[in-house]
Length: 103
Image 1 (cartoon, rainbow, N blue to C red):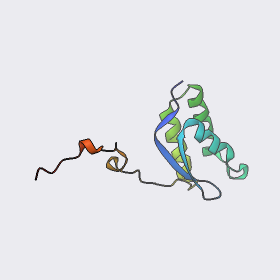
Image 2 (spheres, rainbow, N blue to C red):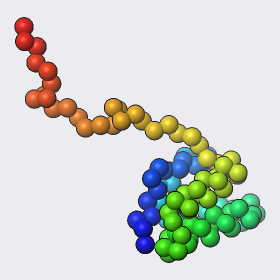
Image 3 (cartoon, rainbow, N blue to C red):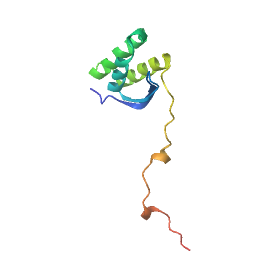
Image 4 (cartoon, rainbow, N blue to C red):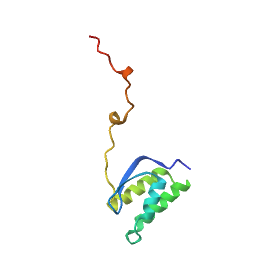
């Protein structure tokens, strides 16, 4: 089985409008299983099947990511949270790495 981790997380809002970060196939499966039965449909079933197949290694993690994202957009729970630029999350510069004023 692949690691199951998505290359990019998917941010969704649950029924209580709480923002959740879906980082892997298991996160997606759990979110889909928590979805209200009365709101499920064919696309939900397809997303469940694809995610479970990716978890078992029968399909790719990328296929699960794509199917889950498509379902989340269709049911309007996806949230486009911009990722922080790398300069904001990069390694810290120590005092010895700072430029020293020569004057």
